[in-house]
Image 1 (cartoon, one colour):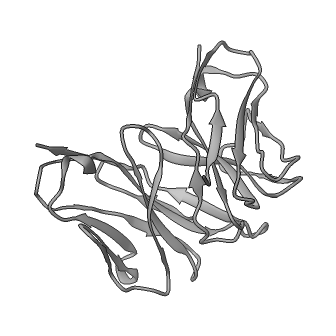
Image 2: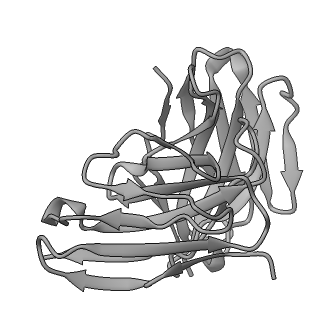
Image 3: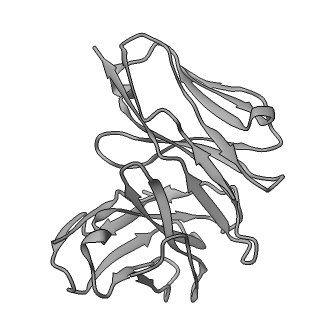
Length: 114
Length: 118
């Protein structure tokens, strides 16, 4: 089944404790992206990757890191999480990074930082 | 700057009523794409439709229909004869490209929470 998977689905952590949210897709998609969803703000892009070893900042990259060493994986790293990073996170992928390609979203990761 | 506005934060209707969700966008691009996504209470994002800026034909899919009007920069979504299962948050989104990188940039509206009451 074609899908985007994220782990963990739920995470409660404390300020400053490094964490990684994994994202994997099995559709051989070139483009992958991370979004955060906050009430009243919709989804905002954190980082995106056009292909292996090609990543760039989205609209809200502060406090996050990403890497794309393999085509299928695009982990999101929070080196020192803070309470303002409490949010619902979505990973997405699409066949190409060109505009207009439909993005397939993972199930989401709900992160709480205390 | 590119922007998507969904002015209706919450809508509540009784089952079988028709309901329209508004979406207004701003963009510099002449070529762009518009999307609607549904987020049911389970939390996942479900793709509903994509429209490119050159195709202003309205689209109907079962009880769902979309009205795209470039003249008013709007891409509204109507559910006919609503059902309880339509209860969800609906997002309108605009896809254009980062100027330098050329990569797609998906900008979402704030979402409209639709509640269908039995």
